[in-house]
Length: 246
Image (cartoon, rainbow, N blue to C red; front, side, top):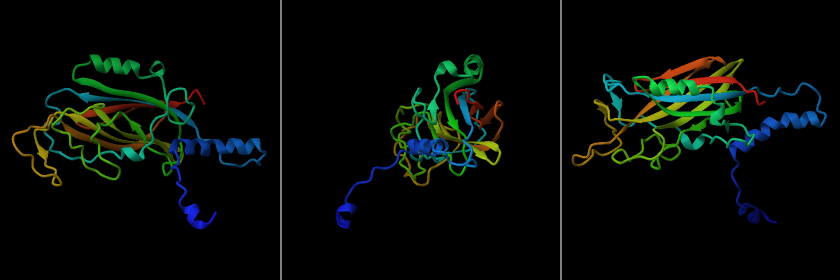
């Protein structure tokens, strides 16, 4: 085969989840093959569970000025959660195993709160520089492509998908656990907004049906403790516990 023929052979992109699985299993294969002791230890595995909820008080966030285009999470670079029962990293956990089910019920019956999304998965905790973000929720079809920060253009029409979506990452920073969140919430139009300078002014009297609001936070967390992330319009309950399945 000459060089010209070799160059024309298409290369299939690697699946990041399967690639990570191979990297995590490599030390096990090395031990089985008789590699001397001293190889890097296998990472600890954790179950990650979060609930996203909105504040239903009509005055929530009314004193803030909100950008019409807050930017959007980098959805295309994040990896999808793998199906329950797959045994792969970032595997979704069945609702029967949710540890925050009682918290969901309390939010559903409490005045001023509305639970929006609950999801749980199991994963290894690896260094923050290498750990991927995972996808949370379902974006609307009009979500922007990779590398863009514009809000979906369907703000004047009903948008399918979950009312909140984005990305999350559990990782390690030295001996500590670290958690990153980047979520957007589809809420009622703000009373005071900053227009999107990249978009032409809307013509006519067409009022938007909703507006996107963003929460981006990262912090060090402790396993086994309930963590709380919030902004004036919505918040997140997070619980990270050592996985019993690993």
